[in-house]
Image (cartoon, rainbow, N blue to C red; front, side):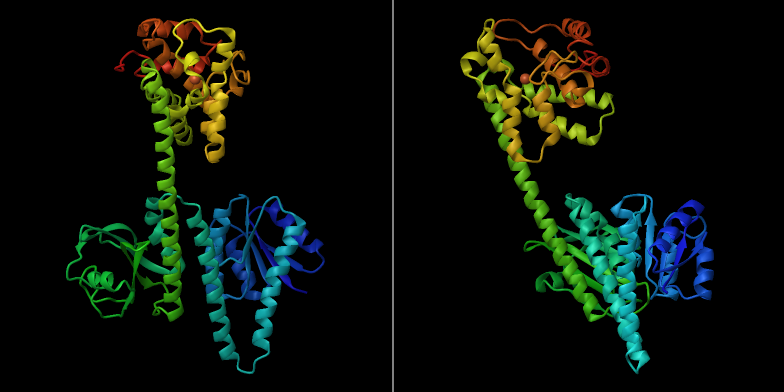
Length: 492
Ligand SMILES: [Fe+2]
């Protein structure tokens, strides 16, 4: 019967997991209370799978995996994590774990993982058992493991790349990703700018300066648009010293534009780069270039979209010279309040964009109503009241602005629930919309209209105080009074 070792410093977790594995009826289970004990047991007995916790004193789960990969590379290790967090699992897999499960445990999942890793282990065992030449099988097996681990690393690193939309962030992380993928100690990414190569990001490289392209190895590579592999003893183009370990230099491009070079060196195992590893590096860089290109295209499209919408707002504001730059001012005041309230970066981004667009729905309101100098009739007011919904409908097909849509739709809700369009009350109204309501009203009161001169700052403040708790969220109003504009210090 296959034997499983469960390693966890918490007795209850060890008991629950080992009982669940035993329940499957197919496995014998031992438990160890920490990584050090686990290593002792593994030395004494053969295990087919090890389940280990990640966070443990003395020897962490990751360190246990690293140790096992050196001493008993054939034992599959499944990580147990309390966090339902892909990152933790993926980083463990990058170190060589076969899979991971999350707490609370589910019998089905445990069984699936066990069946899969045991199957893989059996295939490996049968491969080595069927051959007469055990040393050649050993080599094949270790090659196969290396390949599997490369594919695993490439997959998890690709996942990590997919989740980053900012190119600068990707390029900052690039050396770290490469060092994991190629198991090397030193990686530097140099960015190409005005005939110079500047250090952009690195791991294990003390050198942080710039390099002249002219006459350098990099100039040749730029011309040939190819990678190069420098051998031990050749001169490093980074510091002109003889290399103590092979260095792989790969150009990084976006479309056909050269972005810079990635220099990868100091393999942890001290061996040279193999041909398939070089191919892996080129595949990785190709994938990376596509990602950078996609992000650039997305950024261009996004910026075009924002500019189109901003132009639309300017068109609306141009219809009424008295509301000129209203959206811009409202956004600035709303951002002051958001800062005072300690809003998240995501909320502030939504205000930055959504604040600008909050009245975009006015494009659907007739000029005779929108620009009417006198008092509006009931019907006319009903028409004006449609603008938050029209605005929401304009943004909806764009798909990716959920917070901005909430701000646009709800900026005329009132804290006491008597606002429009949905009559939301108190904290049902999204915070960013409650913030915008105060900023919007303040700017409307202090701006000059065809039928009245703008009110003074003091009167506007008194009015917001009076309506705090009815029209406005009192906490937001209080925060507004603490802002530069609320204190009367801002230039209007
Ligand atoms: Fe509005």
